[in-house]
Image (cartoon, rainbow, N blue to C red; front, side, top):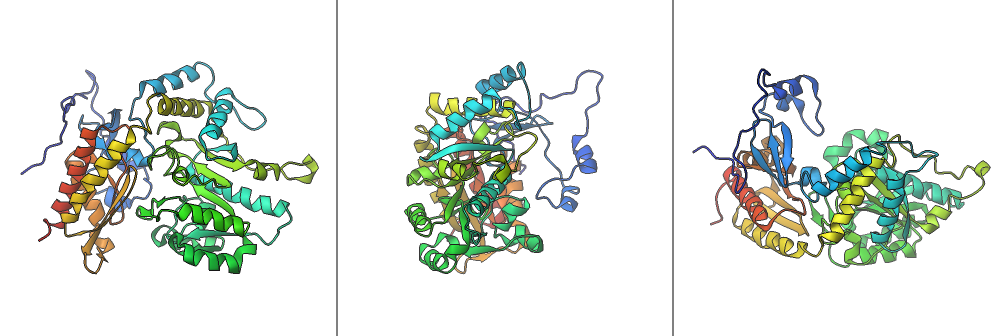
Length: 456
């Protein structure tokens, strides 16, 4: 039986007819002729029916045929308040009446100044300086360069290496890939990368021996706090962040938190670090910073690190790094509107019932024989699919099981994106409890349809 795209309480499908006298464009064909998509095998893309998004309303995306889809992954983990948010729309329009962009090299701008003060006010205690960039990868690269240069200028020349966790992912630029450890994404580029020191999965028992052996060589440890996103939503035991902070201080190793995915409410608090009241030396943020509207990232640092770059111009202690669109006024104004919504709508306070609903809804997935594990922090969840649950045998890559599940979900009116055999749920924080139930039920039905029936 043909599955219908569900539109509970929403406008009917269709409604995007071309203007009179204007032929409807075949955007899919144009895309396949000219576009190269990220993380996509284009040989498959060119053969498949593709989805072209034209507009959005709230937590729904709408394609060129007028079909509506619940945005189950926050448009790649960045959308916060839904799409077409009046307050953010208005803030960007108001800024357009003033200036869209001016360089941040040698100049400043009002939204960037105001946003820096706001970020410091909500960041973990001790982070006092804000360095802007355009993406999460860049924010991490900046943190790495700051940590390295800081130690070099302090005279600790041996501190040139970085420690990272197993299966780490911190972005796709060369420095960010160097501190990554996912073979699928990173192995091909190993000849281009600098050497790093691997620590198994934030295991405190294994971390200290590494620090004892290499502590004097390590500039910083970089990690995603609480949960490793692209690794497959791998969670860390309670108390891990506190212990990591104590160890890095003991060995005088800087601690970099990559909060690109975990920041701005995803874990139930503004930042993942807030769960254990831990303050890193450097912190990278992006994705939800503008509510999912415009590219903007920031690297926050302590005053101690900032002071390490001060000196006479001739000493060349300057941090020689920057981007054309650094601190773009439109993006900064969107970010200010985003943070204002967090305050005025009490977003964090309203998350607990949704987080509880997600946790309860995920319990049912254990009935499915090919669900090997379920991992959740806040509104971030990963459902790991396996061929054999007892042996935790993964599905072979060639079977594209995760992709087939998200294609099935799409036919049912929900947008998901897998991480290999892990189905990710990360809806906008603004999702209603009814929409969250729809997301959970559709995901369950899609996994069941692709992998088989209920247990026993």
